[in-house]
Amino acid sequence: MADQYAQSREDNGRTEIPAIRWDEPPEGPVLVLLDQTRLPAEEVELVCTDAPALVEAIRTLAVRGAPLLGIAGAYGVALAAARGFDVDEAARALAGARPTAVNLAVGVRRARAAYGAALSGGGDQQQAAEAALVAARALHREDAEASARMAELGLALLDELLPGGGHRVLTHCNTGALVSGGEGTAFAVALAAHRAGKLRRLWVDETRPLLQGARLTAYEAARNGMAYTLLTDNAAGSLFAAGEVDAVLIGADRIAADGSVANKVGSYPLAVLARYHHVPFIVVAPVTTVDLDTPDGASIEVEQRSSHEVTEVTAPQAAGAEAGGGIPVAPLGTQAYNPAFDVTPPELVTAIVTEEGAVSPVTAEALAELCDRSRQVTI
Image (cartoon, rainbow, N blue to C red; front, side, top):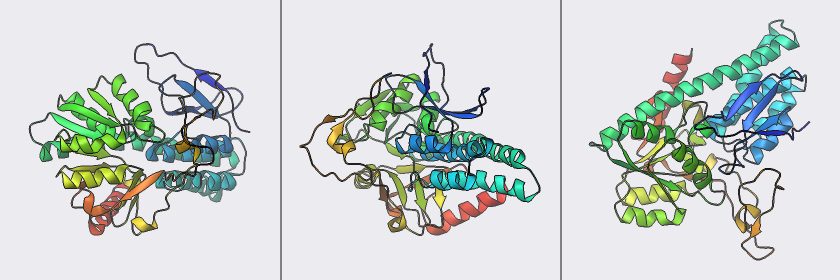
């Protein structure tokens, strides 16, 4: 049954509401999400009582961002198991909710494997459900650790490429604590630079059509006291031309074996601008985002979203507001091209920073070696 109750939380000072958490009230376990469709207007928690509710939350972007989707997928399997639903059915629905984000399928498989292993080992349904939850919590913890390591390595790379500090960094979409078990991916690097007194300015792309930059990255930057400026996506070119960008930092939803990077649509034009203006273009993502089973960028399935996201403008939902009440900005019946992601080829990527180290130049051989090293550490 899809959950439809939410709890509004007051922002007292800088009280942090986690992007995702497991809770066990008397009526049974639930997965609680910070509803990102309501930000920045209000902080509201959405409570999912089953996998279909979580699938809907994923599709509507109430929960989003590659690493967090992996965590959500793992918790979703654990939720189905704990509540006695069909785990295989839940796993299939969750893994297919957003096809481009490889972390989602990775998280689902990890919890499903733990569940199956417990049953194969003679455990009962409850023990198998507990095993799935242990796997989900481990993934959550590991992602927080990976976030901290990526911030450290990413800042070191920035300092190497741009000695002297005073970094002016352009970012796209949202890559902070709202997409992670920790403080994020690309945003975590900028936050580390800010804390070290080395961030002069964070340039925040609005990220059309759903404004994840304006609604979410600006929200996170403001809460962390960072010096930031918001710009429309199509203003980035003039910013580069004026010499106001020292580096581009983005995240990734899938990295193919050859180093092609799928990220929020609008990332590829930034890579082209960065190359023309001799500005480092840096991708920050955990190793789980690297998909060696996807050979190249052309093999990445790019999610196509609804036309109304382009033909209408929707303000962040307020409490009690009816969903889907967009303001038309195009004639009725207008068709829209609305890919959720674009793909940047490896030759335009200066470096890929993961928790296991940075790859530069970006090659298939270097990525395979990185993933192999990561597996050895895990084992």
